[in-house]
Image (cartoon, rainbow, N blue to C red; front, side):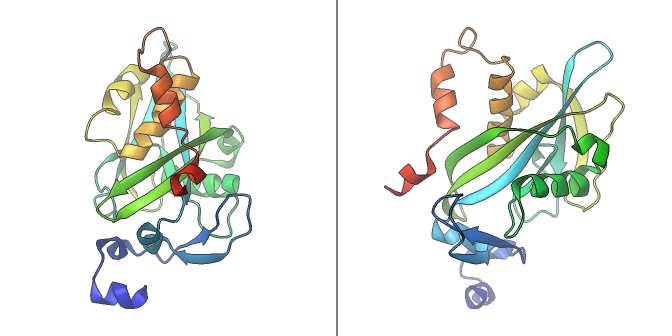
Length: 220
């Protein structure tokens, strides 16, 4: 992979991270090997990651969500809208451990607030772009914050943050401004919190099915 990167044969390898992903058939299996994160895109390896929905209720009781805008220097999806914090699950890290790390690095969330992290399931899908075709599974967390909390980026990966009413967030996730898989994470939040329901969305069943694809079925 280092030789292919040096020859610049695949655009995926331009996003080299010096970060390893575990290679395994099921998440519960021991890893067979590790591979550079950017190289995993070329080989159809399942990508695992962590995403958090950072939200709060303002003084009027309105549900608000923090949305990040990715740094213009990010190797993938620069300047696009994103969840408050997210990241790939690097080799050797536990799921909650990784989520806590990302929250600290990307939004400067203090330890007391991190105690409010709630694991709420996964979002899984198969994705295709110019880098390749690969299945992904994102571990999703909800994090309720106080109304006076303001995220501050510490690692240079987020350009800015904005808090939006959940109705505005619902509009944003169907625009080309949003990183596609982050839209799915928020869609899952909207469904779980009853904002999108069978009563107001005729495609409710399809949406629920499509954001929970069985990963192993993608290899059959």
